Length: 341
Image (tube, rainbow, N blue to C red; front, side, top):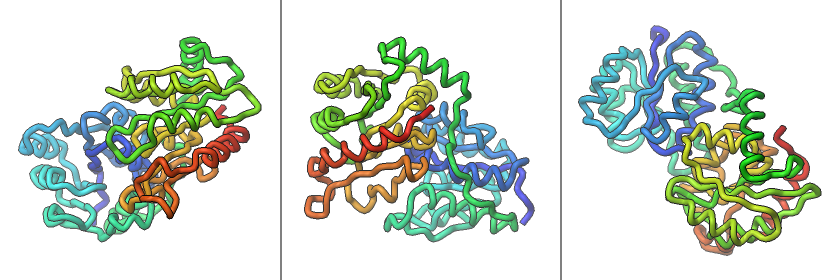
């Protein structure tokens, strides 16, 4: 096939799902440095999608009429499209957009609307989501006779030194964080993504953290999560704590996460922003097959990645069964040896 000059990559679901496309996008950009690569994304992730260094533009799926979305795609005259997750809406919009090459996972009825498919069986959760995404990019490159580069290693989202310094100065001044304190960012909200720890368990974990340096716990909250964050912060007694409600957009929130010496949360979107920044992460996952730590693995380096799930003798979604004492010990060890500076 002719080398595509204009490519649309679609992943129009939640924030965490979108952040796990960045290794695939980085690989695609390395293979085709001169191509125009646009993204089809949902409205909530449009801001951070526009900041993705591996793409040139975004088309926002705002729930508009399918014909209208297809018309916008058609106007851009794409040579190819890769749907990293197959839905009937995405499939229909690419078909109406007259994209000649359309690749997606071979799953669900929507696959019949794509003229190229890759069998992945993601429901088995045999490898990380970001690897499934990258496999589709490799298939796309192979179909077009393009050499496949090695997977690009993170961090996938980078801030300049000036951006980091400015953000750190503002954050430490706002919350009176001592300059030598280790910053632990704890995000107890889940956005409805997966089973999560209770507020009491998050507070217990924070109270069990130990470090040779002072520790400051910043409890973050997304839309509608401030009251939950405040309950956690009020129950933390071992370390100074404050609540940061994210209300200035995802990139401003990313600037906060980039300063963390450790980020702690359940399996949710902010976790994967932290992973893309290569911040040390500690994540809590249910043991359910579709939600495992392997399937939703973060994209930071392995030595910066901790994952905890209920033990085998507990129900797969019983997050109260996670051993907080053991988790706190492991997190404290990472906090002692790794510093994001």
